[in-house]
Image (cartoon, rainbow, N blue to C red; front, side):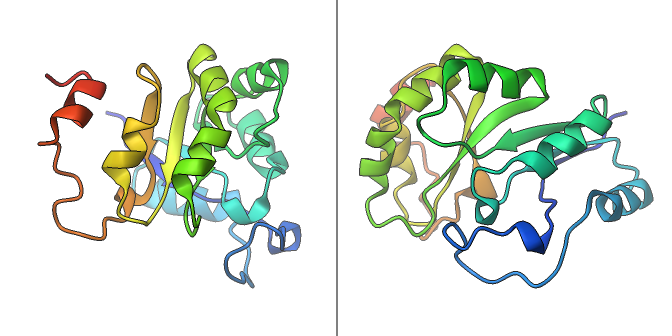
Amino acid sequence: MMNIDAHFHIFDKNYISNEHARYLINYDAPLDEWEMLANEQQITGGVIVQPSFLGYDNSILLNALKHHPMLLRGVAVVDPEISRHELGNLKRQGISGIRLNLFGDKDPLSTLEKNQALISQIKDEDLHLQIHHEDGLLNELLLHIPAGVKIVVDHFGRPLIDNEFSLKNAGINKHLGML
């Protein structure tokens, strides 16, 4: 039986990008600590999610994937101008998705619009788009993602209201192919 940790972060506080950090981190989260906890809990694999405060430097993530290709997969954070070749290279290194952080974004719909070329490349590379947001606009955000893009809602979507995940909206059901 497989037990997968589907979302965890590893990082070195010395690599934090002040440009991308929403808060200060004064500790490290090394892979070996996760491995110790995973072994204790009988976790057999994991998905490392690049924390936004590391910016576009996925080197720690990629190094972990390189050393544990059978155990780990990753979700990277990339520059919206990444080339198709670079995106394909990330996939070959064990990246299964790209994280788009909309947390704290004053205009997340505009950010989604600005990232449409990247989202199209994600779809073409058969990667998933991982959305991190907290603004209560999940249904509206999902409607602005082209059909056929695999979507992972990060941190359970951080709903602001109890029924934010209600898929009673026919538009979202139709968009997600649920009708």
